Image (cartoon, rainbow, N blue to C red):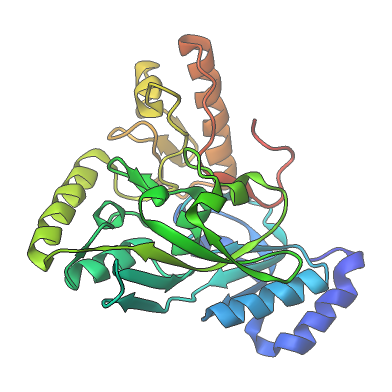
Length: 314
């Protein structure tokens, strides 16, 4: 449970949110890798307004909290998270067909791949590259998600941000200061909350967009493994690919506990035997060490660690 210093604040949170505050919840049930210990508390929000209210309450009460969408690139410790996890299910989507250019607005809990497929059905292009991305809109904006040669810089018009000073702001794409799989928000120690985002689209036809999306989907199925994973584990180093480096070290199929370096794509670690988060972490450290020793390259994590870990992985 929460430490003694947070006990009174937690009581206040119970009073404010009642049965909406679940306690001692196993997080493995909410992550794509199917690992992770218990959070002291969990709250599910269903709109940007509810997300804002929960974030402000937790901030005011000084209770540690984390926001999860699909949790597709987050490794949560087996010892869990000492605080409250806000599960973001704010999923409203609005397509502005008469805007010039046309746009789509989505709350941050909406599935990004589903968003791309919805606009495609209406005959709008621009987000085909995102159709196979499993994460949420908020996670994609935060981490500069990308695929097939595109990323958030291609389409993001603005993001609606709840700043730590409780002020709501609209950030243009340039203000996000995107870098490869990174953003100003991701690099900053300041905790801001992404409430929603608006994306630029282009007029096309459902048939044309469908063809391109099917090509990308087929490529994904061919090159990426099925099963419970965190997606790409490491960032691609400049001028190279993390998967190639790991494979060159002979690590395809290498296993620790219940997690294995995928035999399909070496930058994916797959949970196929009831792995623990510790298994994932040990495998991460072994792969990093081996690639450093044999290839002279220091791999950098693309995923993030959350929860009670002894120390961060460099």
